Amino acid sequence: MATIGKRNSLAVIRESQPGLYLNGGELGEILLPFKYIPRDLQPKQLIDVFVYLDSEDRLVATTETPLAEVGDFSALKVVSINPRIGAFLDWGLAKDLLVPFGEMDRPPRVGQKLVVYIYLDAASRRIVGSARIGRHLSRRPPEYRVGQPVNLLIASEGPLGYNAVVENAYRGLLFRDRTPTPLEIGQKTKAFVRAIRSDGRIDLGLDAGGYKRVAPLTTQIVEALKANGGKLDFDDSTPPEKIRASFQVSKKAFKQALGALYKKRRIRFLNPGIELIDNSTFTPGRSDP
Image (cartoon, rainbow, N blue to C red):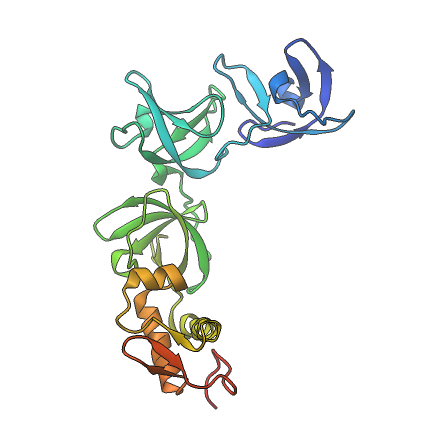
């Protein structure tokens, strides 16, 4: 059976003037217009299509790929606003995605990115978006472990930091003091679980904590030194933006790794920059006996 709002592999039933009719199971026949029919389609071949309702609320299939599907949280651009209905968002299909005014916390503006949850309205079978994402996040307790890497979608900015959707399911908070450079609403990034609160919210950091963070980073720094003739224009005074761009870590983590390497007499500080002392006997990331 075909699923509305998802990609489906469907068989061709018959051909007609507007296109091919596909077997949608309990949903019945679903039209795939001729302009979306693959040129290399073979007899009895299943067609990978996305199923949704067109502007006349008819079930249709398309070989276009939407930016997100039903069940996804996604940041989509507002392309128009109907003052009686809501906002329309570009999600990669010919028909824009509607976000009714009742599914918004504040009025949107054309051109902004709006983080929404995409769902199927049970009564109308229409695919719509909701900017009130909190009501669509999982209520189940997260089962992540401290230090575990997770994927984030930055949803909004608040007094403490950035509110995020964790792994398309949970509410997370990335504290401002753990984000050395500003993040954008709708940005996707990786982070690490720092704590799970009693209300299910996940505290996050952009870097792993403790030795799990420092050990791989010392390896990365030593390899960078080797590749650059034993010297790097990085040290304790390097701006955090430059460190993040080159090593994808915070300045705090970078300074900890430099301290670990200096303690092992693996580097010297040139003021500015650092130099590799000896790379013949040291295994980066390993502790001294």
